[in-house]
Length: 252
Ligand code: FPP
Image (tube, rainbow, N blue to C red; front, side, top):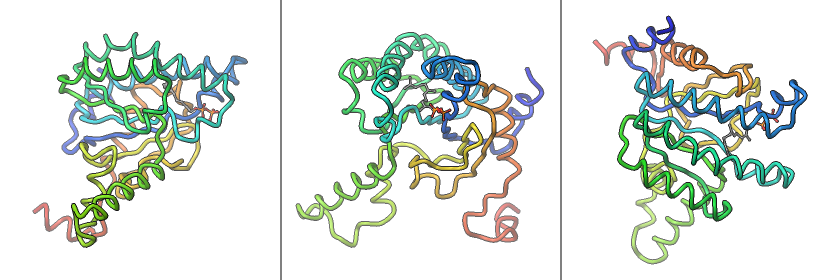
């Protein structure tokens, strides 16, 4: 076991939910003189390693940005390559999910994915639904603004139909209409590749998440990089708007 992994295992309050913006596949491939699709293929390898590593240290939820609402605007060939990769990866990685007792979920406008992707996704979700060690959620055709508009529409419709009062629309009601209604908010958000943006990812849910940025490009992100981020998280004081002294008196 690596030293960092042992340290993570010993943490008192490790992050339960980690969200990742897996960025830098294209630059990684370009640096090697290869096509962007090669970067994405290696991105899948990194995701397999990181999901396995997260499960090994008992992370409960791992939510990764695999394809954003805005990614549809990429060149058609790249979108097609990503969709093909999604189907082949789902087929290939079912064994990884089974071996590690990981449940697969998806968030986003998955109905806009090509039919074969939707079918493969539905099948793997069904086949892993009873796995209970960790939930791996793929954000696919996902964008926070779309998610929030959808939640607002849904609540407005319930008011229009007389199913709820205007006053009942509060934070809890909004959260209950998000794709993530069934999970806790992320404790830690990691973004690779030296970019310091949120890029329309889980904007509601990360209101109080700790943010961790690393220059590593996603295909180079390794188990120890994950563990380093988790250790860094442990050294943050999460005050949720309170002051330090209040937190200390709550603990003692
Ligand atoms: C960002 O790198 C990465 C993506 C847009 C896709 C992430 C996808 C994977 C890791 C593969 C698993 C997901 C699927 C759908 C099979 P980038 O292309 O923006 O890199 P760049 O910023 O260097 O150009």
